[in-house]
Length: 393
Image (cartoon, rainbow, N blue to C red; front, side, top):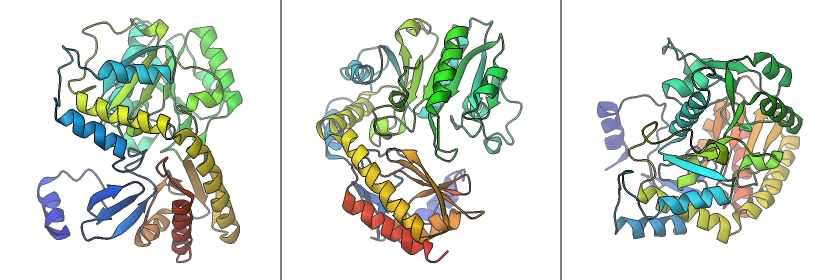
Protein backbone atom coordinates (compact mmCIF):
# COMPACT_ATOMS: atom_id res chain seq x y z
CA UNK A 1 0.00 0.00 0.00
CA UNK A 2 1.35 3.45 -0.89
CA UNK A 3 0.41 6.90 0.39
CA UNK A 4 -2.13 7.55 -2.39
CA UNK A 5 -4.04 4.38 -1.40
CA UNK A 6 -4.13 5.50 2.22
CA UNK A 7 -5.22 9.03 1.33
CA UNK A 8 -7.99 7.81 -0.96
CA UNK A 9 -9.50 5.68 1.82
CA UNK A 10 -9.51 8.73 4.09
CA UNK A 11 -11.09 10.85 1.37
CA UNK A 12 -13.74 8.20 0.73
CA UNK A 13 -14.57 7.03 4.25
CA UNK A 14 -13.13 9.20 7.07
CA UNK A 15 -14.98 12.29 8.26
CA UNK A 16 -12.78 15.30 7.51
CA UNK A 17 -12.79 17.02 10.90
CA UNK A 18 -9.01 17.43 10.85
CA UNK A 19 -6.61 19.37 8.64
CA UNK A 20 -4.02 16.73 7.76
CA UNK A 21 -0.49 16.99 6.40
CA UNK A 22 0.24 14.76 3.42
CA UNK A 23 2.21 12.30 5.52
CA UNK A 24 1.33 8.80 6.69
CA UNK A 25 3.39 7.79 9.71
CA UNK A 26 3.95 4.06 10.06
CA UNK A 27 6.81 3.62 12.57
CA UNK A 28 8.21 5.35 15.59
CA UNK A 29 11.01 4.91 18.07
CA UNK A 30 11.99 7.43 20.72
CA UNK A 31 12.05 10.90 19.19
CA UNK A 32 12.01 9.59 15.60
CA UNK A 33 9.10 8.66 13.31
CA UNK A 34 9.09 7.29 9.77
CA UNK A 35 6.50 7.76 7.04
CA UNK A 36 5.13 5.23 4.57
CA UNK A 37 7.70 6.33 1.98
CA UNK A 38 10.63 5.74 4.33
CA UNK A 39 11.40 9.34 5.25
CA UNK A 40 12.37 9.96 8.89
CA UNK A 41 11.38 12.93 11.06
CA UNK A 42 12.46 14.32 14.42
CA UNK A 43 9.19 14.47 16.35
CA UNK A 44 9.32 17.46 18.70
CA UNK A 45 5.54 17.50 19.17
CA UNK A 46 4.76 13.78 19.49
CA UNK A 47 1.02 13.28 19.07
CA UNK A 48 0.14 16.52 20.89
CA UNK A 49 2.41 15.28 23.71
CA UNK A 50 0.68 11.88 23.92
CA UNK A 51 3.98 10.05 23.32
CA UNK A 52 5.60 11.91 26.20
CA UNK A 53 8.12 9.16 26.91
CA UNK A 54 8.82 8.82 23.20
CA UNK A 55 7.39 6.53 20.56
CA UNK A 56 7.24 2.86 21.53
CA UNK A 57 9.09 3.22 24.80
CA UNK A 58 10.38 -0.30 25.60
CA UNK A 59 8.86 -0.36 29.08
CA UNK A 60 5.45 0.68 27.73
CA UNK A 61 5.57 -1.82 24.87
CA UNK A 62 6.64 -4.64 27.18
CA UNK A 63 3.74 -3.95 29.54
CA UNK A 64 1.23 -3.80 26.67
CA UNK A 65 2.45 -7.08 25.14
CA UNK A 66 2.30 -8.89 28.47
CA UNK A 67 -1.23 -7.66 29.16
CA UNK A 68 -2.41 -8.49 25.63
CA UNK A 69 -1.67 -12.12 26.38
CA UNK A 70 -3.97 -12.02 29.43
CA UNK A 71 -7.15 -9.93 28.94
CA UNK A 72 -7.86 -6.69 27.03
CA UNK A 73 -11.03 -5.38 28.63
CA UNK A 74 -12.75 -5.77 32.00
CA UNK A 75 -16.06 -4.08 32.76
CA UNK A 76 -15.92 -1.58 35.59
CA UNK A 77 -18.57 -3.66 37.34
CA UNK A 78 -15.66 -5.99 38.15
CA UNK A 79 -12.14 -5.48 39.48
CA UNK A 80 -9.05 -5.74 37.31
CA UNK A 81 -5.52 -6.25 38.58
CA UNK A 82 -4.00 -3.00 37.30
CA UNK A 83 -6.46 -0.15 37.86
CA UNK A 84 -5.91 0.08 41.60
CA UNK A 85 -2.14 -0.07 41.19
CA UNK A 86 -2.20 2.74 38.61
CA UNK A 87 -4.42 4.85 40.88
CA UNK A 88 -1.93 4.28 43.71
CA UNK A 89 0.91 5.48 41.47
CA UNK A 90 -0.97 8.65 40.55
CA UNK A 91 -1.95 9.43 44.15
CA UNK A 92 1.53 8.74 45.55
CA UNK A 93 2.98 11.26 43.09
CA UNK A 94 0.28 13.93 43.45
CA UNK A 95 -1.92 14.34 46.57
CA UNK A 96 -4.11 12.17 48.84
CA UNK A 97 -7.40 11.26 47.20
CA UNK A 98 -8.93 8.92 44.66
CA UNK A 99 -8.98 8.48 40.88
CA UNK A 100 -11.65 8.03 38.21
CA UNK A 101 -10.39 6.70 34.86
CA UNK A 102 -11.62 7.77 31.44
CA UNK A 103 -10.32 7.66 27.86
CA UNK A 104 -9.29 11.26 27.15
CA UNK A 105 -8.60 14.68 28.59
CA UNK A 106 -11.97 16.00 27.48
CA UNK A 107 -13.68 13.12 29.27
CA UNK A 108 -11.62 13.73 32.40
CA UNK A 109 -12.62 17.41 32.31
CA UNK A 110 -16.27 16.44 31.85
CA UNK A 111 -15.93 14.40 35.02
CA UNK A 112 -14.41 17.39 36.81
CA UNK A 113 -17.30 19.59 35.69
CA UNK A 114 -19.83 17.05 36.99
CA UNK A 115 -17.87 16.78 40.25
CA UNK A 116 -18.06 20.55 40.74
CA UNK A 117 -21.75 20.73 39.84
CA UNK A 118 -22.62 17.98 42.29
CA UNK A 119 -20.48 19.59 44.97
CA UNK A 120 -22.52 22.76 44.49
CA UNK A 121 -25.75 20.84 45.23
CA UNK A 122 -27.75 22.74 42.63
CA UNK A 123 -27.22 26.07 44.37
CA UNK A 124 -23.74 26.80 43.02
CA UNK A 125 -22.92 25.66 39.49
CA UNK A 126 -20.81 28.32 37.78
CA UNK A 127 -17.23 27.46 36.82
CA UNK A 128 -14.72 30.19 36.00
CA UNK A 129 -12.18 29.42 33.28
CA UNK A 130 -9.54 31.48 31.51
CA UNK A 131 -9.41 33.22 28.16
CA UNK A 132 -7.23 31.28 25.69
CA UNK A 133 -7.73 28.10 27.73
CA UNK A 134 -8.45 24.75 26.11
CA UNK A 135 -10.33 22.00 27.93
CA UNK A 136 -11.72 19.74 25.20
CA UNK A 137 -14.15 19.33 22.32
CA UNK A 138 -17.23 17.88 24.00
CA UNK A 139 -20.12 20.30 24.39
CA UNK A 140 -19.37 21.15 28.03
CA UNK A 141 -15.59 21.29 27.66
CA UNK A 142 -15.67 23.46 24.55
CA UNK A 143 -17.98 25.80 26.47
CA UNK A 144 -15.41 25.85 29.27
CA UNK A 145 -12.69 26.59 26.72
CA UNK A 146 -11.84 30.29 26.49
CA UNK A 147 -11.52 30.41 22.71
CA UNK A 148 -14.38 31.50 20.48
CA UNK A 149 -13.17 29.53 17.45
CA UNK A 150 -14.07 26.15 19.00
CA UNK A 151 -17.63 27.24 19.78
CA UNK A 152 -18.70 28.47 16.37
CA UNK A 153 -21.74 26.59 15.06
CA UNK A 154 -22.52 24.75 18.30
CA UNK A 155 -24.81 27.18 20.10
CA UNK A 156 -26.84 27.11 22.28
CA UNK A 157 -24.12 26.12 24.71
CA UNK A 158 -24.54 24.81 28.27
CA UNK A 159 -24.88 27.53 30.90
CA UNK A 160 -22.64 27.98 33.90
CA UNK A 161 -19.26 29.05 32.55
CA UNK A 162 -17.57 32.43 32.89
CA UNK A 163 -14.27 33.42 31.24
CA UNK A 164 -11.70 35.87 32.58
CA UNK A 165 -8.22 36.95 31.41
CA UNK A 166 -5.37 34.65 32.41
CA UNK A 167 -3.06 35.93 35.19
CA UNK A 168 -5.52 38.73 36.08
CA UNK A 169 -6.54 38.24 39.71
CA UNK A 170 -8.78 41.33 39.78
CA UNK A 171 -10.79 39.96 36.85
CA UNK A 172 -11.10 36.61 38.60
CA UNK A 173 -12.24 38.18 41.88
CA UNK A 174 -14.80 40.31 40.03
CA UNK A 175 -16.23 37.25 38.26
CA UNK A 176 -16.92 35.37 41.49
CA UNK A 177 -20.59 35.31 42.47
CA UNK A 178 -22.75 33.43 44.96
CA UNK A 179 -23.18 30.80 42.21
CA UNK A 180 -19.44 30.16 41.70
CA UNK A 181 -18.46 26.62 42.65
CA UNK A 182 -15.09 26.10 40.92
CA UNK A 183 -12.27 27.48 38.83
CA UNK A 184 -10.73 25.28 36.14
CA UNK A 185 -7.23 26.34 35.15
CA UNK A 186 -4.26 25.20 33.08
CA UNK A 187 -1.18 26.28 35.00
CA UNK A 188 0.52 26.52 31.63
CA UNK A 189 -1.79 27.16 28.71
CA UNK A 190 -0.69 24.94 25.84
CA UNK A 191 -3.13 25.62 23.02
CA UNK A 192 -3.33 29.21 24.30
CA UNK A 193 0.30 29.88 23.35
CA UNK A 194 2.44 28.50 26.24
CA UNK A 195 1.30 31.07 28.79
CA UNK A 196 2.66 30.37 32.28
CA UNK A 197 0.68 31.24 35.41
CA UNK A 198 2.41 33.70 37.73
CA UNK A 199 3.14 32.30 41.19
CA UNK A 200 1.63 35.37 42.90
CA UNK A 201 -1.52 34.97 40.81
CA UNK A 202 -1.97 31.36 41.88
CA UNK A 203 -1.31 32.22 45.53
CA UNK A 204 -3.99 34.92 45.51
CA UNK A 205 -6.40 32.73 43.55
CA UNK A 206 -5.90 29.98 46.14
CA UNK A 207 -6.59 32.46 48.96
CA UNK A 208 -9.86 33.66 47.40
CA UNK A 209 -11.00 30.12 46.66
CA UNK A 210 -10.22 29.02 50.20
CA UNK A 211 -12.25 31.86 51.69
CA UNK A 212 -15.26 31.23 49.44
CA UNK A 213 -15.15 27.41 49.28
CA UNK A 214 -14.46 27.46 45.53
CA UNK A 215 -12.86 24.30 44.13
CA UNK A 216 -9.59 24.59 42.20
CA UNK A 217 -9.50 22.15 39.29
CA UNK A 218 -6.04 21.89 37.70
CA UNK A 219 -6.24 20.81 34.06
CA UNK A 220 -2.93 18.95 33.74
CA UNK A 221 -3.88 17.08 30.59
CA UNK A 222 -0.83 18.47 28.78
CA UNK A 223 1.40 19.54 31.68
CA UNK A 224 1.26 16.29 33.65
CA UNK A 225 3.62 13.31 33.76
CA UNK A 226 6.90 15.18 34.03
CA UNK A 227 6.47 17.56 31.11
CA UNK A 228 7.31 20.73 33.10
CA UNK A 229 10.16 19.37 35.21
CA UNK A 230 7.87 18.21 38.02
CA UNK A 231 5.57 15.18 37.96
CA UNK A 232 2.67 17.64 37.88
CA UNK A 233 2.82 21.39 37.23
CA UNK A 234 0.97 22.34 40.43
CA UNK A 235 4.14 21.40 42.35
CA UNK A 236 5.85 24.50 40.92
CA UNK A 237 3.34 26.61 42.85
CA UNK A 238 3.48 25.00 46.27
CA UNK A 239 -0.17 24.00 46.56
CA UNK A 240 -2.45 21.02 45.98
CA UNK A 241 -5.61 21.43 43.87
CA UNK A 242 -8.99 20.06 44.88
CA UNK A 243 -9.08 18.06 41.65
CA UNK A 244 -6.75 17.40 38.72
CA UNK A 245 -7.29 16.03 35.24
CA UNK A 246 -4.77 13.98 33.26
CA UNK A 247 -4.48 12.34 29.84
CA UNK A 248 -2.05 12.67 26.89
CA UNK A 249 1.33 11.40 28.22
CA UNK A 250 -0.38 9.30 30.90
CA UNK A 251 -0.78 6.33 28.55
CA UNK A 252 2.45 6.49 26.56
CA UNK A 253 0.42 6.32 23.34
CA UNK A 254 -2.63 4.42 24.62
CA UNK A 255 -5.91 6.31 25.22
CA UNK A 256 -6.44 6.98 28.92
CA UNK A 257 -7.54 9.94 31.03
CA UNK A 258 -7.95 10.43 34.75
CA UNK A 259 -9.85 12.64 37.17
CA UNK A 260 -7.98 12.86 40.48
CA UNK A 261 -10.02 14.17 43.42
CA UNK A 262 -8.78 15.21 46.85
CA UNK A 263 -9.63 13.27 49.98
CA UNK A 264 -12.42 15.67 50.97
CA UNK A 265 -14.19 15.16 47.62
CA UNK A 266 -13.92 11.38 47.41
CA UNK A 267 -17.63 10.82 48.16
CA UNK A 268 -19.08 13.52 45.88
CA UNK A 269 -19.61 11.09 42.98
CA UNK A 270 -21.11 7.90 44.49
CA UNK A 271 -22.07 4.80 42.43
CA UNK A 272 -24.43 5.62 39.56
CA UNK A 273 -23.42 9.28 39.15
CA UNK A 274 -20.59 8.86 36.61
CA UNK A 275 -19.14 6.17 34.37
CA UNK A 276 -16.90 5.36 31.40
CA UNK A 277 -17.25 2.03 29.59
CA UNK A 278 -13.63 1.77 28.52
CA UNK A 279 -12.11 3.84 31.36
CA UNK A 280 -9.20 2.19 33.13
CA UNK A 281 -9.07 -0.87 30.87
CA UNK A 282 -6.28 -3.35 31.66
CA UNK A 283 -4.42 -2.63 28.42
CA UNK A 284 -4.43 1.15 28.96
CA UNK A 285 -3.47 0.78 32.62
CA UNK A 286 -0.61 -1.52 31.65
CA UNK A 287 0.74 1.11 29.26
CA UNK A 288 0.43 3.83 31.90
CA UNK A 289 2.27 1.76 34.48
CA UNK A 290 5.03 1.44 31.90
CA UNK A 291 5.16 5.25 31.69
CA UNK A 292 5.49 5.56 35.48
CA UNK A 293 8.19 2.89 35.45
CA UNK A 294 10.13 4.77 32.77
CA UNK A 295 9.87 8.13 34.54
CA UNK A 296 10.87 6.77 37.94
CA UNK A 297 13.56 4.24 36.99
CA UNK A 298 15.21 6.25 34.22
CA UNK A 299 15.36 9.56 36.05
CA UNK A 300 13.30 11.35 33.40
CA UNK A 301 12.23 14.25 35.63
CA UNK A 302 15.90 15.14 36.06
CA UNK A 303 16.37 14.72 32.32
CA UNK A 304 13.57 17.23 31.68
CA UNK A 305 15.29 19.79 33.90
CA UNK A 306 18.65 19.28 32.22
CA UNK A 307 17.35 19.16 28.66
CA UNK A 308 15.04 22.12 29.26
CA UNK A 309 17.99 24.34 30.23
CA UNK A 310 19.92 23.10 27.20
CA UNK A 311 17.02 23.57 24.76
CA UNK A 312 16.36 27.11 26.05
CA UNK A 313 20.05 27.93 25.70
CA UNK A 314 20.07 26.72 22.08
CA UNK A 315 16.84 28.55 21.22
CA UNK A 316 18.01 31.80 22.83
CA UNK A 317 21.24 31.59 20.84
CA UNK A 318 19.18 31.03 17.70
CA UNK A 319 17.05 34.04 18.62
CA UNK A 320 20.15 36.23 18.63
CA UNK A 321 20.93 35.11 15.09
CA UNK A 322 17.36 35.37 13.81
CA UNK A 323 15.54 38.63 14.53
CA UNK A 324 12.25 36.99 13.48
CA UNK A 325 12.25 35.26 16.88
CA UNK A 326 10.64 37.09 19.80
CA UNK A 327 9.91 35.86 23.32
CA UNK A 328 10.82 32.31 24.31
CA UNK A 329 8.65 31.05 27.18
CA UNK A 330 7.53 27.97 29.05
CA UNK A 331 8.64 25.47 31.68
CA UNK A 332 10.48 22.21 31.36
CA UNK A 333 10.02 20.73 27.90
CA UNK A 334 6.86 22.75 27.21
CA UNK A 335 8.36 25.61 25.20
CA UNK A 336 6.76 28.36 23.12
CA UNK A 337 8.78 30.40 20.61
CA UNK A 338 6.89 33.56 19.71
CA UNK A 339 7.54 34.70 16.15
CA UNK A 340 7.52 38.37 15.17
CA UNK A 341 5.34 37.83 12.12
CA UNK A 342 1.57 37.80 11.60
CA UNK A 343 1.37 34.10 10.77
CA UNK A 344 4.04 31.61 11.87
CA UNK A 345 2.37 28.53 10.39
CA UNK A 346 4.69 28.69 7.33
CA UNK A 347 7.60 28.16 9.74
CA UNK A 348 6.08 24.89 10.94
CA UNK A 349 5.50 23.92 7.30
CA UNK A 350 9.14 24.61 6.44
CA UNK A 351 10.25 22.59 9.48
CA UNK A 352 8.21 19.69 8.12
CA UNK A 353 10.20 19.90 4.87
CA UNK A 354 13.37 19.77 6.97
CA UNK A 355 12.13 16.63 8.73
CA UNK A 356 11.21 18.34 12.00
CA UNK A 357 7.71 18.06 13.45
CA UNK A 358 6.54 21.00 15.61
CA UNK A 359 3.25 22.84 16.07
CA UNK A 360 2.09 26.42 15.56
CA UNK A 361 -0.61 27.77 17.88
CA UNK A 362 -2.29 31.16 18.31
CA UNK A 363 -0.90 32.03 14.85
CA UNK A 364 2.45 33.24 16.19
CA UNK A 365 3.75 30.69 18.69
CA UNK A 366 5.82 27.65 17.72
CA UNK A 367 5.07 24.92 20.26
CA UNK A 368 8.08 22.70 20.95
CA UNK A 369 7.44 19.72 23.23
CA UNK A 370 9.85 16.84 22.58
CA UNK A 371 9.60 13.53 24.44
CA UNK A 372 10.97 13.80 27.97
CA UNK A 373 13.58 11.20 26.96
CA UNK A 374 15.18 13.68 24.50
CA UNK A 375 18.98 13.97 24.36
CA UNK A 376 21.38 16.86 23.69
CA UNK A 377 22.26 15.40 20.31
CA UNK A 378 18.59 15.30 19.29
CA UNK A 379 18.10 18.88 20.49
CA UNK A 380 21.14 20.00 18.47
CA UNK A 381 19.71 18.35 15.37
CA UNK A 382 16.24 19.83 15.89
CA UNK A 383 17.51 23.39 16.39
CA UNK A 384 19.73 23.05 13.32
CA UNK A 385 16.71 21.99 11.26
CA UNK A 386 14.65 24.85 12.70
CA UNK A 387 17.36 27.31 11.70
CA UNK A 388 17.39 25.96 8.14
CA UNK A 389 13.61 26.38 7.98
CA UNK A 390 13.84 29.96 9.25
CA UNK A 391 16.36 30.83 6.53
CA UNK A 392 13.61 30.33 3.95
CA UNK A 393 11.03 32.56 5.72
